[in-house]
Image (cartoon, rainbow, N blue to C red):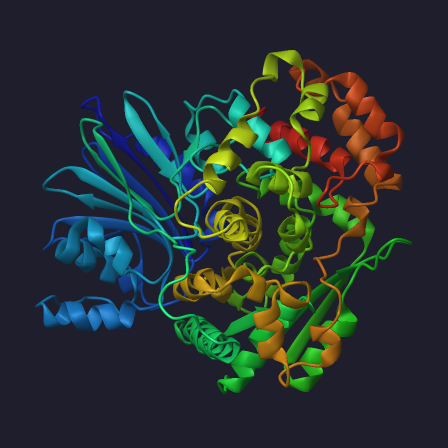
Length: 594
């Protein structure tokens, strides 16, 4: 995992090397082990490396193959790089490094744009053809690795986070009204290609972008996820056996493809606990696990140590527990917000940031359970949606997911930022797609291909990479997800949801971990807002910057401030925190010069 950036000029000028240096500086925390740059006329690359595979200097980037006239900057991990290397050697290619980066160079030369679909892993990369003066960008199937860009008539710039683009200058920092509507309706999710800023975009997951030195662009989607039944229906035991084999393979690959130790973020929930069990089942030595907890409130416990301890004891892991007081959370919260490439409402973003700081002192790679709930139907709102029989697909989805319906959004946002019901239109289109057999197939398909990308997946990447820690997510192995998408929704949602995972865990995990109510990374202080946290949010929303920005209607703000603990979204998020977080992110990232 690394940080990448670059620029391609369309106006006949050479790449702005100072801008690339500024961008690279903003990516240093993503790659603390090495920094490098490359330029070739209109093209410039910057790179920060986190050394995971082939720790030698031969895999430092930008990676240049002089024989093939290619240059590469790459962020991520290709789990099948050894198999691809052997296939490419059979075609006559020779290699000067032992890492996965060079495999991408040869794969492009051998297969062109189709190289992306040959890669199994999490990746975002940019590849330059020196002879043809063409730039090729690609992003993995689920957007596990980020790729932001800005484009105008003079140039394209790209980077692993928004802060790098802003550091280079020239970005339209006005608020995108469509992105804003998504932000406050879809639980902080702004689906690609949009962002909260008008001048910044994201390459969608499972897409490539080919650009020449005149600015001509060709964007292509290289992978789709069918959520339809095929062939003879499987019996329950056949589904479970297939899922077990696929998940076991995904976990094993993410443990073995590394030249450094790999740990597990053990929350105490079913998903991360099962990762530990499967690693032990595969014979992985010296299992290292990490858990974090916070202060309790009268409404909610601040840790799940009672469950994570059971798993760590059962498998005799080298376990680390970190308990963080609320005073530390509040003091460090600005740092976590600075690490957000985009504003994130999920309260566990801060938790992941503080946990990653401690974990990075012990290991450079961890496995994490993100994605299991979306892939196997683990959230409480899925059974509620399934039980709905009235209304359109949009209505069945929105009444259990939307943070605010459009009338409330209009009450919250000042007139100059108001507009159409952009989120309802987008969700209607996604739910009507041709790749799903039923309403629940469509919901789970949309969640795993669109919504998850810009909520839990982005959150985990940003918060771990802020400390030079690579997080691997085996539940988003594309082969596993393809299998699960064929599985009937009713099977996945049995027993309250995530039935296949619960069934696989029987005999591997304590019953208390399997049969407990669904838990979430607990941070009660950002859900039940009071005391110093309430003062912090009030100061943000009453600040001169907030009032002059004029984004929110003051009566709505005052309503939330008067009774913050009783204004929650359908997904149990604090509406006050949503307003404060976005404003604070804008103050920390958009209102300042890097």
